[in-house]
Length: 145
Image 1: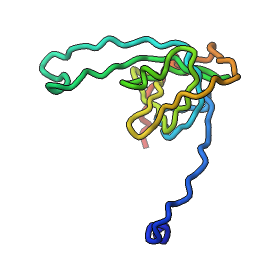
Image 2: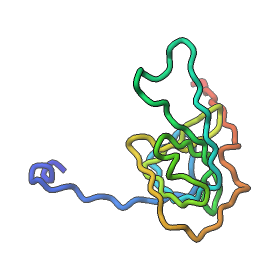
Image 3: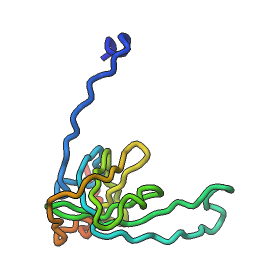
Image 4: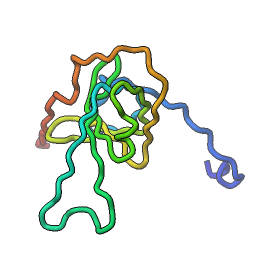
């Protein structure tokens, strides 16, 4: 790898490994998956008491909770700012470098600044809506050694 950096060549890119929604586990990251958007609900912006809000001159973040899925199940995706415009109901998207965040004991799929959301041509699969991974509640258990 050091020789590739010295020679000015870029290292060979890996092919993405696409995963299915039912393979997602809590606390994991680096997922690439193709999903259809079932629904999108904007989250109202709340002003925080105590001055913990955004800095002066900055716009508040736009957030929407989108139900996305594939032929194996569905999960709640938290879309931020420009992702909200891309993830409209009926669209098909490729989520690159997605990660699982835990919110109130349930899994949420997110893509941060290191990942990418791309709208692609409509997929041919039917979304399996009866397997919602965000409805499964997880609890952290400490095991004594």
